[in-house]
Amino acid sequence: MNLVRAHINLENSPVSMQLRFPRFLLFFVGLFKRLVQLSMLILVINLFAYWTYQHFMEAAQEQKNRLYSRLQDINAKIDSVDIKISRSYSNEDLLYAKYGLVVPDTNMREMGFGGSIFPESSLVWSAVPIKKLKSTIADRFQKINAKIDRLNNSYLGLQLYIERLHGNLQHTPSITPVSNFFLSSPFGFRTHPVTGETEKMHQGIDMTAPKWTTIRAPANGRVDLVSTSETMGRYVSIDHGNGIVTRYGHMEKPFVKEGQIINRFDVIGYIGNTGRTTGHHLHYEVWVNGMAVNPIYYILPEQYSVE
Image 1 (cartoon, one colour):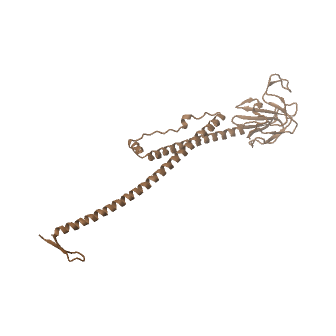
Image 2 (image 1 turned 60 degrees about the vertical axis):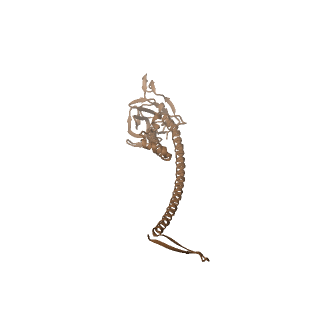
Image 3 (image 1 turned 30 degrees about the horizontal axis):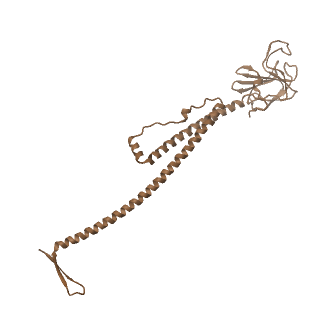
């Protein structure tokens, strides 16, 4: 057997000893030493890895908590926006009712969405609540955007309707053509003051005022006729659109030309005594869809006005 000798001297002592042991034992001692060193290295590496893992896990958990808190804040703000949108529905209803429109269906305002939930999604949501909250917020954002788009379209429709209505009002007679007048003859059947005919239909009203009193247009429109007749004398006819036409008789002098575009309050002529009359006055007619109507119905009280 191959042996290894080792001579050991004790310090400051004459005693010494000699050891003999097999060479392979020395090999195992070195191997054991290396194994111990390797184990210590692995232990140090594991401890460092564990510390690193714990550090990043704590940082990730903290970040996750901050994100979850932030998502909860966003969800709360969505609640606030949703409440404000719901309150705006009352204003929308009032506007629709004010202009005689059909109030929007309440169910249409909820803007429901459909869709299936996959089992794996439910499993992930139960394990990671933040993912469920994120998905809920995304759905709510989509719903809020749909509500806002619906409101925008609704108010745009109201705006267009009001603009059309305002345009119609601008072209609808609403003021007296003459100021400071005396109503000398109303609309309806009467005895003609010149011919003496009884039950004669008076298709307008007579507004007595001094000669050269200005006559103003009661609404926007286009002058479609400036002419003279035996009965009406010098007269003007204005087409206001929407089937409404006004006529002005017995003028001293028209102040407009055929085809001229005019606006409410524009001067269109002056009171006179032309045609078949008994004195200075304006004969004022309002026709709607080819039928003469009482002009009084198209004169607003003084406290009201249409710009």
